[in-house]
Length: 132
View 1 (spheres, rainbow, N blue to C red):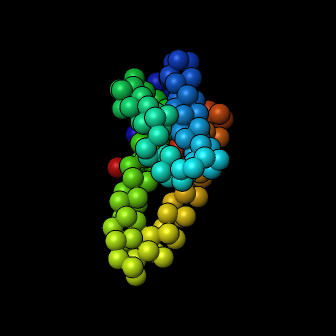
View 2: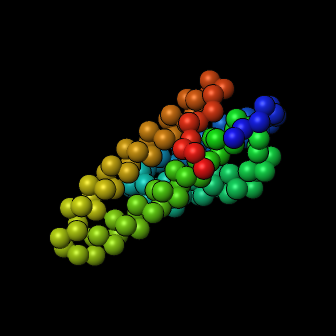
View 3: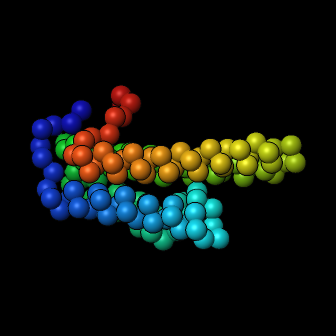
C-alpha cells in the first residue's frame, strides 16, 4: 500500500504539529469546562488539525506518513459519529446511560489514538491500518 518514498522533514514536522493540535484539544477537554470529545471534535486546534490533514494529504501519499494521516482523519470522523450516536441515544430517557457510557469509552479511545499515533510517529513507524 505504501511505496518506499521517504517523506520530507517538513511533512514529518507537520504531522507532529497535527498530533500536537489534537493533543492540545484533548488536554483542554481534560482541564477545561468542555469534555474530551467535545473539545476534540469542536475546538479550533482540532479543527485546524483536520483541515491540515486534508490540505496536505497529497504531499504524504506513498510515504509512511500516509498511514498517520489516515489514522488522524479516521479518529476525528469516528469520534464525531459516536458523538452523533450518543446525542441520538440521549434524546430518550432510557438511552441516557448508554450515551454516557459511550461518551466515556470514546473519550478514552481518543486519548489512546492520539498517544499511540504520536508515539509511533516519534519512532518513525507507520500506523497499522486495516486493508482498504
